[in-house]
Every structure is written in structure tokens, then in C-alpha cells.
Image (cartoon, rainbow, N blue to C red; front, side):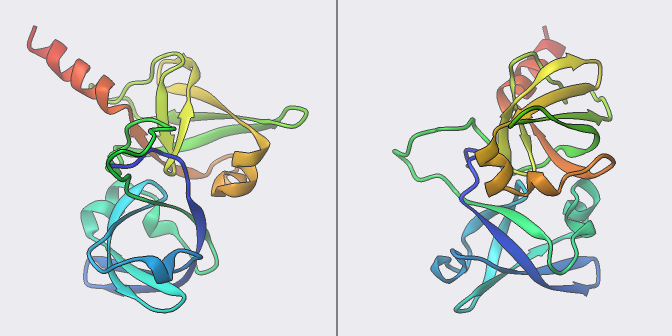
Length: 195
């Protein structure tokens, strides 16, 4: 389980395609501290560390993951949001994030607003993927509060710290982002189907 509070940025230094899988080699300040078999969220996608060096770590994204996320579009040099899994007893500063991306969304607009940024996104509606006003959403692994939720669109406001310390600053109009909808909302929607 994760919180959506990005720990650090990593940099893609290698990509290796093998059959339907994609190995990502990431350089980051935390890479040398990782352990093989550890779960780490990469742009919000929970991936298992399979190799560690002094400055890099390697993870593998399978075909199913590549179909539902933006990981297959990464290029060498791209920044990746990284978060290690939550420890029992830690504060939950963001919201409950599973690292199971539901789908990608597309950025409709980015508007600078005197020191902050306003982003609007759209997604393909489905019965379990919903946004509520002032509810939580995870974008590329970042825990954010959604507002102006209308149909299959919503907005988020980004403060300078988040803009500088995550890869949200690389998201432009037309960019694809990973979306994980609030797990509590998904369970409530599922239960309502049976009532």
C-alpha cells in the first residue's frame, strides 16, 4: 500500500523489451537502498524490484501493465515518480493508494495561476471509475484532490512544491497520465450494484 506522497524522482536510464515485458532501469537517490522483491510505485504503478546496483534499480512491467498505464511510452531520460510502500504505523499523509492503475487519462489543459497550476483531465468512463467533488485521485502516483468533476472530466490544483518535486511539471496538454481512482469509492460503487 502507498500514500501518493512522492518520495523522490527517478530517471529512466535504460529500457529493455523482452517478449511482452518491458524492463525499466531507473537511477534514483533511493535505488541503492532498495531490496530485491521490494514493491515500489513508479508513476503510481506498483512494480517489483528485480535488480539493484549502486545507483540504479530494475523493474519489469508485463504486457497487462503496459496496456493499462503510460509506462510503455517512457523514454530514456524521462523522470519517474517513485514511492516506496508504506510502513505499518506511518502517517497516511495522502490517501490509500494501491499502486494498481485503473486506466490512463489525458491532460486537457494546463493553466498557470499566479504561483500554482490548474490541470484538467479526462478519462474513459466506466462503472467503477468515478470521481467525486473534493475526492481523492492518484495521478502518476501523486495523491491529489479532484474538483470541478463533471462527467468524465475533473481538475486538480498543483502547488509549487508538488510541481517542482514530481514529474507533473512534464505533463502537457495531450499527455497521458496514470489514474488510480479512490479504492473506497470503487468498493462503494461495487456494493451499490448488489443493493
